[in-house]
Image 1 (cartoon, rainbow, N blue to C red):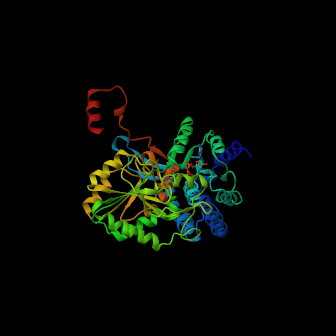
Image 2: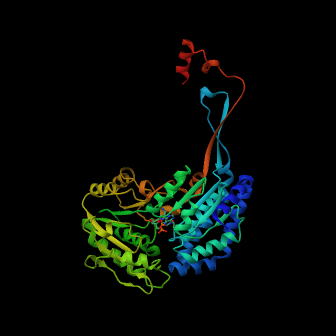
Length: 453
Ligand code: NAD
């Protein structure tokens, strides 16, 4: 079936009005939760083939997110979807005012390969919860999971409501020509710009979940053991192929040596061995070569070993003296951690401000003043103090970027709003209205208007 036909069917399905029912939406979400639970074993197998990701990591970083999001909406959707009463100002009396959360209609969700299940289904859950139809286009770069997602969805949902199409650049380009009512894209800033331009042709609202270089700052007062443990975990999870992974570390020069020792100690403790449950492989040869190209052997402080047959790159720490080095010129998206030093926080903030706004930022410190400066003086999508990555696992926090790292956010109620138009309606009585706003405009009306407005 052509994309146009699928899209037409979804339009017709939406116009039946069936998705306006909260009960219908909950049933679909429940089905999604059940389908995932019933196919866990096959889902593990597919992601193992694409990324060498273990069951432990797949559950912790993908399936649990899907299940929690489903649970969240089954519990909270009735309240979220209810029209919200707001105050009516004096000049509009006598009236009632409400915000209606209206589904946009037909939506397109485009996802990347690095957390293929989570980053496909979590946005879709918000879209369905808000009463939309969805065409989902997973990444062709993770072909086994893309096929798995296609089977799970296309065998279990009405195609007018939720349908998966497969393909790469050519197919996505075709899809983007259609007039969607909302597009939700997760991927690189470069492709984000292509999606944004395609959406502009139809003035389609977009949410862009992008990437970039996410900094970690390790201050002099930091608990270095905890910092090392949490940075190592966040960086080498999925072999560094996480959008919120720490990209590089700025450590205070006085604690650099102890911090490096702690980093190495933790890397060794966590046994990131090829083919083991503790470590993923690099997605493909292209990325493998790209990441290796970022490692200058004379800058390696730890690691650097690799193995083409297994697409394995060892956790690697490199020292960096300046931003002109290759490893500082692009998002690393792999298991290479550059370490830079600083003397004053101002220097680091200046660098962060000079670069594109990152998706995430992390600060390790015990100093309340530094915490305050971190949250107020630099812009980033979201982040943690004294941890990495975990902010995205709190459904009560919005998850998204800013500037070059994205537009909009989702998770929990933020996802619901992202996929809803907030329609404002004022309902007036036909009596009790002062004649003030109607001509003829007299001096006395002017006096009253100034008091009222
Ligand atoms: P990508 O931008 O290459 O691909 C994402 C999607 O866009 C895929 O489905 C792909 O088929 C499609 N696509 C690729 N090129 C296209 C083109 N020219 N025209 C139309 N569609 C196209 O990204 P990726 O390599 O899959 O993922 C890595 C990037 O995504 C990194 O920058 C990472 O930081 C970012 N990312 C962000 C988040 C987030 O939540 N903010 C999550 C994961 C990854």
